[in-house]
Image 1 (cartoon, rainbow, N blue to C red):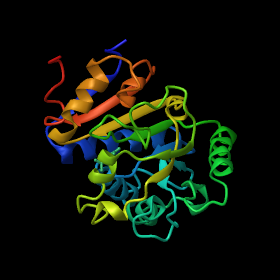
Image 2: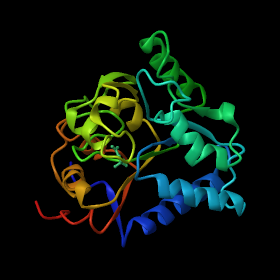
Image 3: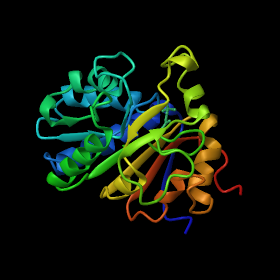
Image 4: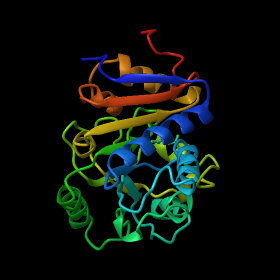
Length: 250
Ligand code: PGA
């Protein structure tokens, strides 16, 4: 099954951001009412900054765009400075002309997590599905908070974070110490993500090289959740040279 993912190798993280933003801007121009799936984390920050510039230059109008985010920490209110709602507002939504009511981020303080997840899936269906889902990848191959072991048909649900993910998110970029990181999150499932009409996964830096190689060249297996995108008909990875360094070397 390996081999159907398209891989575009860029010289560095800045170039990944430019290429990804241009692809998204082109998709918005082709369909101004596009439904975008979005990701958080360090990797897409550059892409969001480029998209904000393109929006200002009227090259990426967000007025008709609807968005859904992959995940949210369980227990964090949208006003918490480490919540993914706050991340999205500050990195993208406040900088473009998206209508706030068209942005959907799971509520980490919902009374009933199962109902919150079902409502999220229902909203995606109600707008006709996601056209393009932007993803990052964890060093352990996770996509969203689908940690190794997540099934190919998993749906939006409450999940536990692995220690590796907790450590990665408390290295000072986001949380200061591991004990501050929530242990659980609401996360779109692999099945949810696979239903998007196109997928754009970004990876930068050598810390992602093993996961990228496993996802592209390795077996189709829940051990590397990103490998479960291999049979998607329209999946592109945009990676920098460092993240591409182990490709083709299995
Ligand atoms: P990062 O996270 O962009 O902060 O490296 C990606 C991920 O864990 O999916």
